[in-house]
Amino acid sequence: MAHQNVKGFKRIINAFHFSIAGLKATWKHEEAFRQEVLIFLVTTPLALWLGESVVEKLLLIGSVVLVLLFELLNSAIEAVVDRIGLERHELSGRAKDIGSATVMLAMIWTAIVWIFILLF
Image (cartoon, rainbow, N blue to C red):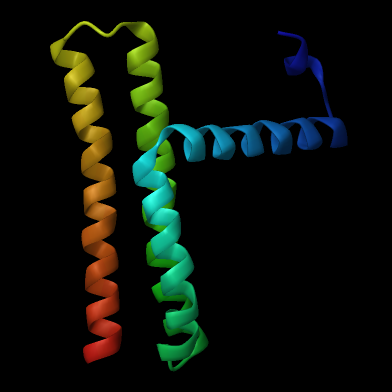
């Protein structure tokens, strides 16, 4: 691949463009990601308002960002598995389930962070 030979600042610019393309593709093809971005847009102002310290605000916002990060990884896993083939295979199902589990655990962690910071 030609883009592997690019070095320096040009490589950083190329990586940025690939990253934006990835975000756009996830937005277009993954309803869960769109829903989680909406949650992020709602919870970020709440976190800024309800968090009593900079650390609390960052933890509240960061926990939601963690969900977005794991959703991106889960979507990437699903895309690769689907690219390989749509027929049912134990390992394909396992990979998708594990990716989904990461998102679920991030959501549980987000709930724990918000509950502890807001109620205790």
